[in-house]
Amino acid sequence: MTAESERVRTDVDKALLGHATYRSLGEQRLSPAEERFEKGRRTIGLVLAPAITILFLLLPLPLEPAQKTLAAVLLGVVVLWVTEAVPIPIGGLLGVAVIVFLQVEPADDVLARFGSSTVFTFIGAFILAQAMLKHGVARRFAFFILALPRVGRSTTGLIIAFGLITALLSAFVSNTATVAMLLPTALGILAVIAKLLQERGLVEIDFDPLRLRVGAAIMLMLAYGASVGGLLTPVGSPPNLIGRGLIEEATGQRISFAAWMGMAIPICALMFVALAAVLLLLNKPELKRIEGVEEYVAQQRAEMGSLSRAEKNTLVAFGVTVFLWIFPGIVALFAGTDSDFYGAVSDRLDEGMVAVFGASLLYLLPVDWPSREFTLRWRDAAEIDWGTIVLFGTGIIFGGLLSSTGLAETIGNGVSNALGLTSVVAITVFAALLAILVSETTSNTASAAVVVPIVIPVAVAAGVNPFVPALAATFAASFGFMLPVSTPQNAVVYGSGAVPITTMIRSGFSFDVLGAILIIILLPLMVAVMGFGA
Image 1 (cartoon, rainbow, N blue to C red):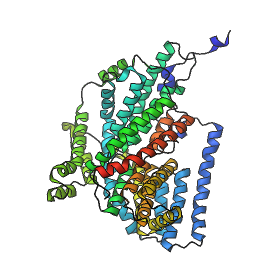
Image 2 (image 1 turned 120 degrees about the vertical axis):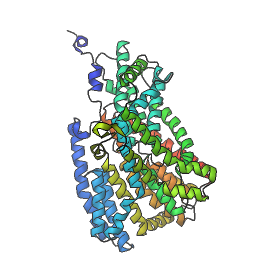
Image 3 (image 1 turned 180 degrees about the vertical axis):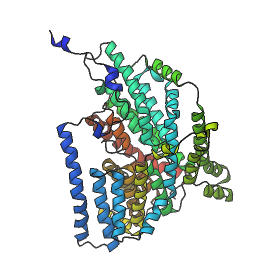
Image 4 (image 1 turned 30 degrees about the vertical axis):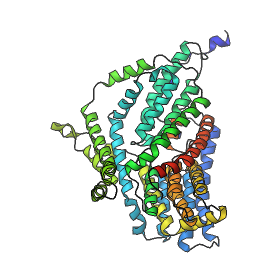
């Protein structure tokens, strides 16, 4: 009996589709080395976080007491975030509690920031996303795009289509939710490609479909495409709202929904082109033309049938919300931002209130009136990512404290003097690189909450308008493509098993570099075109 005859033919469906949803690290089989690393990382965090906090408090530094205490606690929280010694939202809450215990500010003043309108924006947006996922609206949209002419005929077209789908959805839906929703579809398409390779004899009889380059390209396009698409709107990603709020407070210039999109669309379009080039060059698909994907998409669309009542209700709620979000921008185009009408509209249509209003419609639009059954049940809202909302709220708290205690200004002046940053170009480069570096090791939300309040006083100390550098830091905070822990969407695709860590690091580093270059070059240009930063 030869070694060839002993090899078992790979069951592609079993290998790929047996775990169509994301598996956390705890649900995966870790090697002894990986298990030792995870235990060690968490243990180090539990020891290092309090140690670094206490040590910093004992150092004889020329800082005011409140600034020194805040810096010490924030350093400990960053260690907890990086090492994940405790769940990331808990690390933020723990830091907030310690800040109050040590009387940096009274509890009411600290916690008042958690009631920010941006927190409610994400609560509403997450509930709308939950409805889109539960009732299949987002999945239907994905298959509609895939059914467009020529999309399913080549691996290049397929990968680009998946990136476009992800980017468009993540502009309004949580990046993580978008990727998690599309992951089963991506695995289904990958199964079709793997079977085609198997039938053509282009792979070994016992090949591993989870190690195909085309699979890695599709999965990384999902993860990275979500980050790019999240930059398209102010509500696309938590860092956008944090950065926009801090910029408006520091400069007095309001960035409307429409103005943000006007600046972001050209930048994101070029970022997407760069992303496609990086992934297709570094993860060259095993074959160019494919057959069978169009049939798979047609079958799935046929099984979905016509729009259900729940889907129609979800589209109504989503449409009303998006319209109310962009309406002030439409008014500004015709009446101008100085008009009383624009002021009245923009004041009333607060984005946070619009978001919760749109989410509330899902509990008013019935799917079965006789039984009083509505589009969503409360338990659906209870299942949204409240952890991200908590982290978002604590990020706002830390950002506000950095400003109110003067620590951000102290750091800004120190950095400015040490590095000699005196021009808007140098400060913008510094802002983008610092935000990317921080986002690789902690959440994007935490990155924006920490970096933007530092960049603003650096610019002010140098006599530079902080608008462009702060916006560059805001955009760059959504980067972090090298590691599974950099963003939740990275973790989702890494959990599929189709993306080796070395592939993620190589592709992520390349896109980090290109993305930083695009932000540094294009953002000042778009800000000038839109008339900001003067």
